[in-house]
Length: 147
Image (spheres, rainbow, N blue to C red):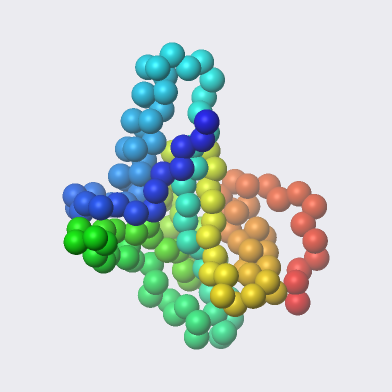
């Protein structure tokens, strides 16, 4: 079994999104153990990560996309998870402070798909080469950079 904590909250408790997710993960793991399961469940969280490394990135995504996105869904206040965008070292520092990222076993990264395979391949390569290793991930057998 794998728990995937949602990136949508239908309440606003004034608690930061990452802390709420970390609390959900803690509660899930406690319930799992209390149910008598002997193995550890896998838990994943999802984060939007958009490294800004070029003028095109700056034009497309700007540098101010780092706030929780708040809106209305079915008449209730809803809050979507935080997007991380900026220079790779800035994203790395912010992800390192994310309580849910620390609590999870797996981080699922979402990137915008509208710009095509080549753009996304370059974006994912930046994440794999510059952000993920700084957070403790060790890439193996990465191809040469996409140009």
